[in-house]
Image (cartoon, rainbow, N blue to C red; front, top):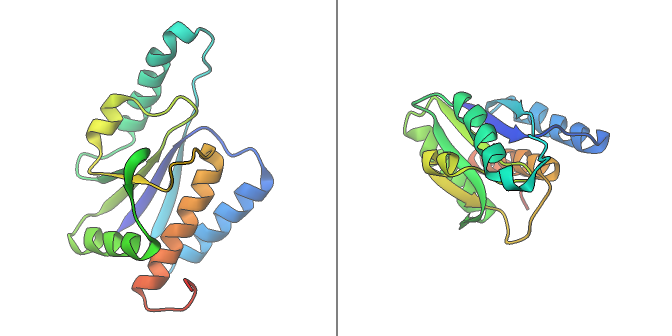
Length: 156
């Protein structure tokens, strides 16, 4: 199974890039992971914020195959422990899904069309994280879940 992370915005800080790339490298024995960056729309007029979100949403949706399993990261999604996330990944893998897509929104959040496309809505916390840090946290948790499912040490 391939894993794709679709994220709005670019990573600017080198330490975040470095950590994210390290987890992607560590994941290579378990999954092929790729990242698609969607350019963030700069809101010049607050009255058009929803329109900008829709533009980002269309770009996100165009990067998702019809048969992909989609997990959106949402503050109101379901919170899972690392072990539960590992079980969820195992369940998805065993179902024959070819591509699992995680979607991280930008500063404006995700458009309703993206929410509606999700097969599962995941929350890491009630806190709000920057999209850059969330990308790093997500790659680490996918790696942790992979180690758990392989019965290998790391997750303690």
